[in-house]
Image 1: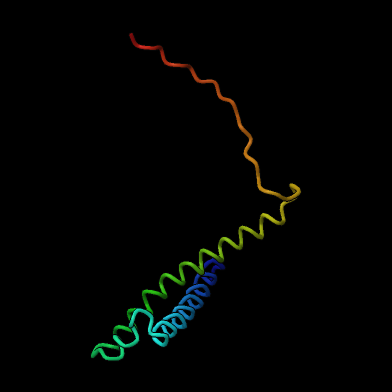
Image 2 (image 1 turned 30 degrees about the horizontal axis):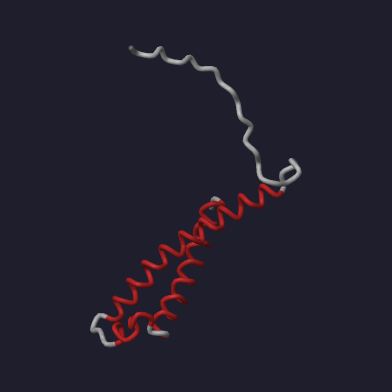
Length: 102
């Protein structure tokens, strides 16, 4: 299996685990009265499942983006340029000016 697929699956599992903890805390702490609303609903299981899946999608996306960004940060530290941010070098390019219209 390619490394990027393994990284994505690991990020997805981590994100859904974090989303489960987040949903449990939101319902346990009764944030915005959601705990009471879900507890007294007749579709509580579906509401919790949808809340968990949608938060899991967001959390896993953030986890994957963070993992990719951390990989890029590690590559920058191994650069032989002496450290610091990379500076762009300005390049002058001649371009003809248009003739003014009268």
